[in-house]
Length: 79
Image (tube, rainbow, N blue to C red; front, side, top):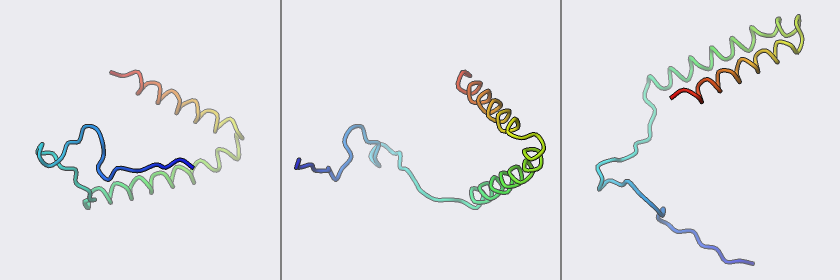
């Protein structure tokens, strides 16, 4: 079996406190509110699309996929 070791300090470029930049973790109240809002909107869209999928069948999902692909390619090509 091969013996591997893991360094306790990350290797490479490290922007530490000596550079004046320190990463801080934490969620502020507005972050939690936006996460909750996104969850509510996502749930509403998911439940609202149910009758359309039932009436139109898989074509709705294909249309959503095409729309999503278009949005991703549009954002990827924007500079």
